[in-house]
Length: 342
Ligand code: 5GP
Ligand code: MN
Image (cartoon, rainbow, N blue to C red; front, side, top):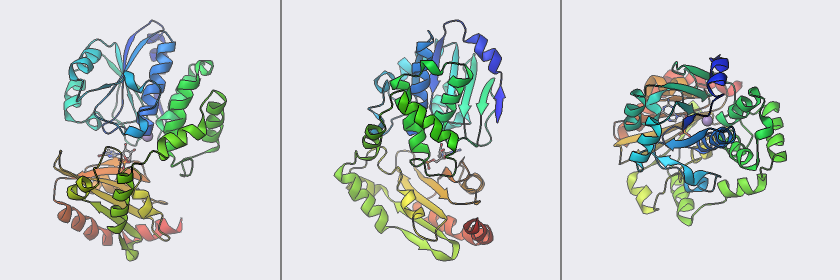
């Protein structure tokens, strides 16, 4: 755990400030939940906080309290730039390095003259002025709860803040099932329900909001699934053509990689998704046990994340990317074998 400059940050926040709160590119439930919860909390403390996200986030998160007040850097560029330029401090939530916001927004943030405060649970964070980093915590939303607790402000958590925090903890723990889910996580979840988070509604809003096309895209993904039993590995591909066929919308592929990991005996899963806009293949990796997909992705696919959930990308074609992936596996046979056992 790294806690840097906390007392100084606390005194800086004793006066009302203009604050921008930023999440990573392709924001997920944890990024949206954490940024919005922190915004609501800071507003209640008398500051003026604005959430700026790099790009679009999935429809199934649009219902989050405060969602309509956020700026999208790619789409509302002048408002976003103005909010950033007028701010006294920027909070960076749910990411560990400035490049995770994408190159356009990164350029703006690199010129930012004031200080950054990072709250994040990803490995190997960049060094910024104020930091609360803990790679053992399941979600940034749990860290925001603990940040509020460190400020002795749990009383300020209302139903909106509780709802945002519950959502991010739920999505980043795979609904409270990953190893990072601790008894503390469950105690915090219980407190959030007491504060007004309606757990059944949140699960419905996030998980039961599928379009028919999204289910058909899932069907396509499952029929593309390849299994490599020798390496306890399974992977899925999705091409641009397949995405178009099922009217792909942002967020439609979220969670599909977990189906590959749900196969008995499989402990390493990947999904390769063509992204025609960026001319890359975007990759999600998942593992069970000690096999670190963070390290695997850092070493081979320009990415990173956590030990058991990471992302990466490839500038090569889908075919070349998949060949590269499968030809790496023999080097990891022993590690994958060991990961299966623990
Ligand atoms: P997902 O596969 O769900 O997109 O991401 C899994 C985890 O890895 C998330 O915590 C996400 O923030 C991180 N991640 C996803 N893509 C990248 C990437 O390209 N680089 C890095 N460093 N982390 C990523
Ligand atoms: Mn997260």
